Length: 77
Figure 1 (cartoon, one colour):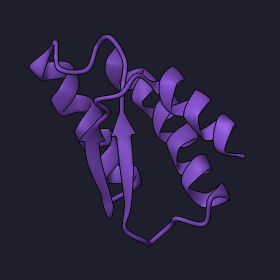
Figure 2 (spheres, rainbow, N blue to C red):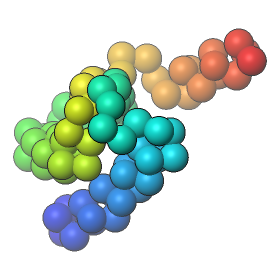
Figure 3 (cartoon, rainbow, N blue to C red):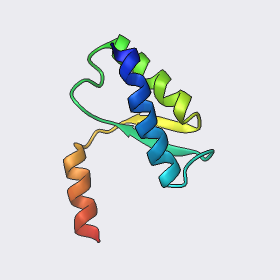
Figure 4 (tube, rainbow, N blue to C red):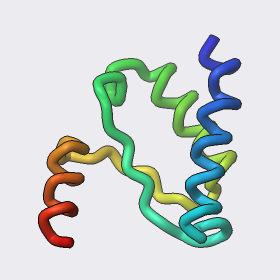
């Protein structure tokens, strides 16, 4: 089932990468959410899918919750 959805997820990541002008460039790609780090199978599948779409991305696990990152970013605008 994850493999089927991998195509959808990869398409979304590829779209963002293209829209942000990151295709072919090195950039940090933060992973966050309740599933990260809980299942080796999920982590390996997710990472391999992301690396296929964005081979130059440096995958990182966000240590700060995404909502906090967004709030800090909004406050700095």
